[in-house]
Length: 428
Image (cartoon, rainbow, N blue to C red):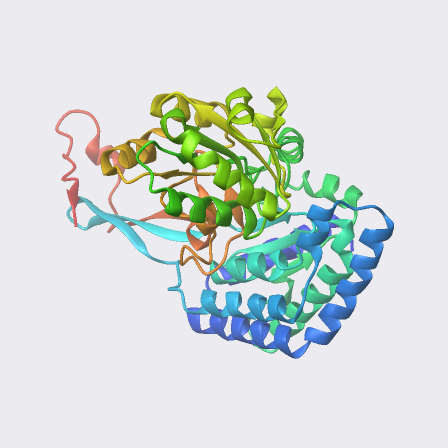
């Protein structure tokens, strides 16, 4: 089956999905979650093949960390789908109702986008996350994972599709997968049948997708996330938050890559904090002042302030004041997630207002920037866009709306020219 046929089937499935009851969708999702747990052994067997390939091909440690599955992660996939089941159906919700005139009413109602094309690297657990959110929101999806996860992805997609088939009325072409790079190029041409592309990867990768398709793109790009320790910070709290932001899962896009610290508190805070990073085998690079205040810190290059390491490495910079910290983050950040550690409420609110990222935090780890943790059930990605959807994108990012107009034979001519009727425009 070629990509055009896949896209046509997805589009036909999307028409059916758009009108499915919440009960049918939830039945399918429940079967999907059960099937993952029941087939855990086959998923891990396929994943072992992928890991063997990744190691022989010299794939980076960061990608291998994202690729690796175990029983706990498979259970987590199933748990994520069940959390989506528990969410309200986002389709068919009335956003606004306006009386235009007597017996002439327009309603703004939520509806699915249609067909989603999702391209991602290395993470097999993205398959059930994206698939479950698309199904719940009434969208069909065409998935393309990285070649390093091909066996895992293929097995998981087959498991999900077979689970869907157990529920009559749910089209099994709701979830499909393509496998080759050439097929990606073909998919980008299918603007007639695919309505939104969601690429998850590097900035260059996202830009490539944007520049090579007429399909709207919801960009999930790199996460250059910052922590800022303010002069009014509680140092034990700052240490705890910063260590978790960097170390809880260093390969994640919401892990902290750059730490800023106010000069008034740097001399007191940095030696202990750097020592704790070193204990956990974190490579630390820093500005001149950081190197002067602490031992065993290598000088940072200018490029370090613009890098997503996804690894046990962090760049530290001492800033003169709060305004410099905000300016630095808005210049060098990727618009993903940034945190301030301070006990000054006014300073915190100013940070949350002035930093332009999709997630801004006060005294909490950057690792909280996640669809499941935000209560969205899961996420199709974390968008750094400033349109449509931002931050962890759950169901609300896969929903658009339409206008439904209810009349009794009215015509525009009655509202035009001399003696025209006036609209009432009365919110209902």
